[in-house]
Image (cartoon, rainbow, N blue to C red; front, top):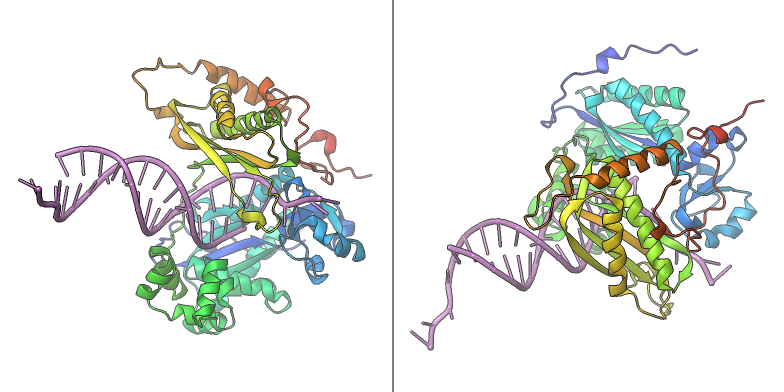
Length: 447
DNA sequence: TCTGGGGTCCTAGGACCC
DNA sequence: TCTGGGGTCCTAGGACCC
């Protein structure tokens, strides 16, 4: 039994984001792998990887898998030899499980820091507002967060603490890079600490510097984070995409420009896109897929109590030419704007399926399709259209019923016929672990 | 043979208006 | 015959993130 230190001193009511105070980023270590291990303790010290949808790529690796030489985001089939050689445990992704554990981690952080001081940044990361403190106090607090989260949820995290989000991410990067030394926690509170840290960090590891900017910077002779920090704002504005670049440089200097976000749960765009399990060339399958994705997107839409005015669909042809870069093949898309915004599934399926006719080409094979909803409006204030009778949300009642049944069954028990019943095109997911925490029949058993 | 999915923000350029 | 300047809105596309 570990004694929990008092939380109160850190539970600050109103930490202003006015450049005062500190920011922590709390990041779960190899999150998906950690989730899988939680229910398979025998894997605790063994290499583990988790695959993306369709069992396509490797998206999470345990430290042991990294050491074995498995690279991030490479196709599964390319890693198969290495996986066999090192006896690596492989899982298909199980988003239901990860979502639930993510929620537990975030709740823990909210309890520690106060709910208004936590910004959930992704499924495995959150920013936390902290008051000003010394280098030493910050480092200690980081260790404290780490200990409590692990104790309460079983998930191990890394923590970076600094005056700005970008510096906090840098601190976190360094914490993860040398776990033995840092115990997964790094604070960069003073300018001196920041100087030492940024000098040791390559420019491509900075948050906000992706492939293309990294190449550009290195070509210009800017290789360390510290060198980038010392460039002028005007220069950054010109070279790194306008205001984004200027902001980046300021953040590296400790001037906070990226504010904490209020919980942004209403999305501006909702997408459902999938690779097919196998290349598909008949229009019927594509229509079924589009109808299915439209239903899923509509469901997400209703969950955030919004309606959509614009619906776009796209299909991606399977490239015959192997020279074409996999990620840069052509995407064929089209869109339509509805007379009024809606969240009723059949009102979205119909136009979506019609759009397929516009872009489908006979005889061609396709590998992926998707539906995107945009022009989202809050259900409370749908903009009317003079020439269309108000739908009075008649469909909405049916939708609520469907959502309720599907939710209580945890799946898509009820669906529209347009989605198809056989679904030959569905993605593969052969190695999924049980949904331990959300399905009674898949619960973890202890004998 | 087999290469994920879902987002955000920003900019440039065109259409249109007065 | 002459053909400005300033603004808004929309869209496409690039860059980034996890």
